[in-house]
Length: 320
Image (tube, rainbow, N blue to C red; front, side, top):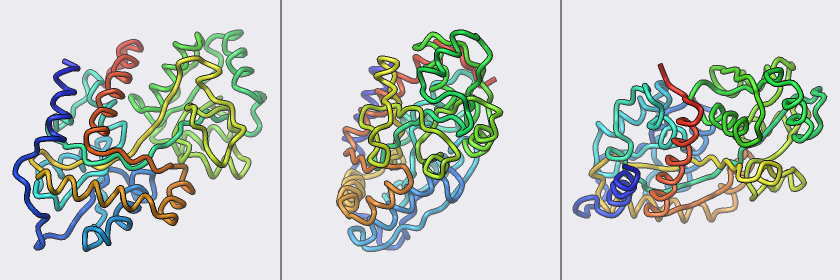
């Protein structure tokens, strides 16, 4: 099944119908499935600004929130497939939600969406409150092992990357942590600051302002690449071998999007990410440019979907 899924994604990226030019009579749109001001929205607006010159017009960013991003995804899939409308497709929607048993999804992401380009990556951060007694992740893990079930981790909700990251940490570090789901990363961070939960594993962009402002303490970064603003931050893969989480935010199109339109969007995104101003905007929001062409992006989707699927099955997570 995984091989078939991978073949479908790669096939979609390579064989997308007859080449045709982007229609001149339709405005360009990037549809984002999450609220204005969030990371998904920020990426969509950075892309819209960056590709304007190459595409001859600035795409309009349209926010269609709800259903974990799938109201937006369904709108793109049901809309024109001529290259005028694309979707800001984040990691969670593309690789986690489709793997959760009982999750109702109105589209088949591996068949109905075409990978266009990966845009940005986000290092995941393990953070605790500034007043927490734990100065290092090793201290926190030792306390969790000494008192099973006494410490907690927050998430943006059941089945989110934050939830699954916590479950991976539990399994790979052999600790028993209590999961506390919230309606988004922001309220989880507020409770973390207040000391109501012990840790949060989330996109660095979700908490970078609180870390810089001293409200939260950065215990570790969940990928080896690290982050320029925190060069001395411990790397989670060195503390818990094999544990690495890298979030990403890409652009996808609807099934049937012409190959020429895919290439035009991908080339415009690649060129835009070379600009110093746009790179700074991403970095300021806890994101790093991470361009991948359609073929490479398709492979990333398949790889991460396999990884998260294994985590979901091991933790016996269901949507119902």
